[in-house]
Amino acid sequence: MNRPTTKELFNKIRDARQAVASERIEIVEAEAVAGDAIELEYDLETELKAILEDFLDSISPQDYAGPRPPQKSYKDKIQGLDIFAFVLDSTYFKMTAYIKFAIAHETFWLVSLHKNRLNKEKP
Image (tube, rainbow, N blue to C red):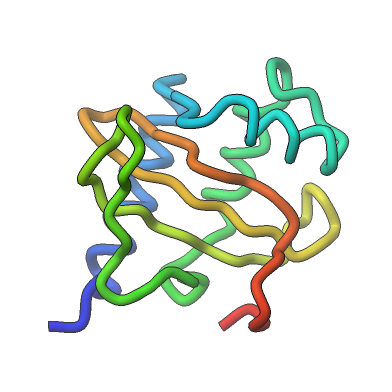
């Protein structure tokens, strides 16, 4: 089977939306995400939830940019969880952006959110 399937991605996006709406948001590496927030010129403490809601309302399974099967996390907080990466044209930042996250126990785990640095264009 070629994971993640469209159905699996749809469900992960849905679960991510629910977690963010319920403010169950955790950051895996705060320093890295803070550095990217500075580059994107947003306030991590006051704008993150709105940005995540905007992204999650905009992405679809077709925007998936991660490996197949999904990469497993090696970070302590989310070790062994599948990581889901998406590339999309962000209306919030007016540029192509990259977001990578995991979902566990109804919690959204933000791994990264930054300008698209992939060598390839959006799929």
